[in-house]
Length: 319
Image 1: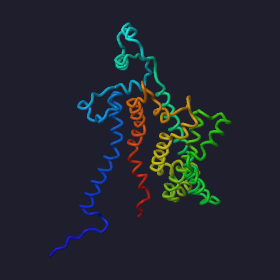
Image 2: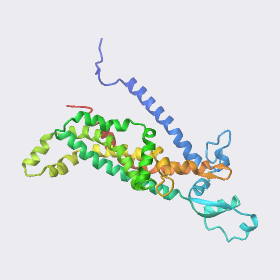
Image 3: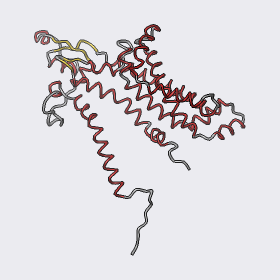
Image 4: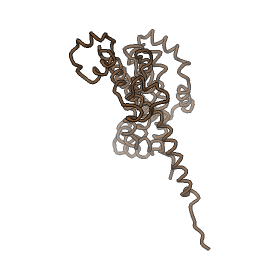
């Protein structure tokens, strides 16, 4: 008789197969809403609310760019005689509008709202990472009185539900003139994200041996130079992972954006749900706006996915 030895730590082939099936099934289930949004964005308003739902393009429905046209353009209904007297349509969106007895009268507010999201989200993320890195380094390397209490206080600000402080912040911003301003939203999102940045980055910096900095300072580097040339390069993985998490929050935040912005600084999340079409909600335009809104965060995460995976697992296995 012969016995086959295997590690009690390494999973067996059957376990790997079951785990793989579960992961694939979970991925497919989570992708269903995204696929549905993408399909809705290329439907006509009638097809988007049809029952039973039309799912397969070119089989159940003919793809249309009407949702994207309605997202970027504002239209006005006109009489057939007025439309007949117009020159030929100058673009695809104009043709779609005239097929509905409408004309394009100008651009919508989606692009300015999207730009506001870019500026506020990336601005607050950069500020959160800078402040969080400096604070995390101080907590990790220096003797700070009541360090544990301060770290818990910093983390507790993240536990507070936004609605609990929404009214005080609204009143404070109104007095300071920060309501409906990009600066006000950047400062607010930074104050929320900096606690997460401090806690995440402190763990990464703790894993960097102090001896590296000591050796650099013995060679003549100042503390700041050692931080810049020794600590920061080794903490890049943690900084990138932290930036992704901060960006996701700032990019998707809805409650504060609804309360504190209405025009100049309004971001895309509160703007997309109020896109109104003829006779009600323009679901293809809403889906088109949502699809485009997902792209920047998706591209940013995919480009930095290697750092994100390393950052999540950093320090999990110690030698």
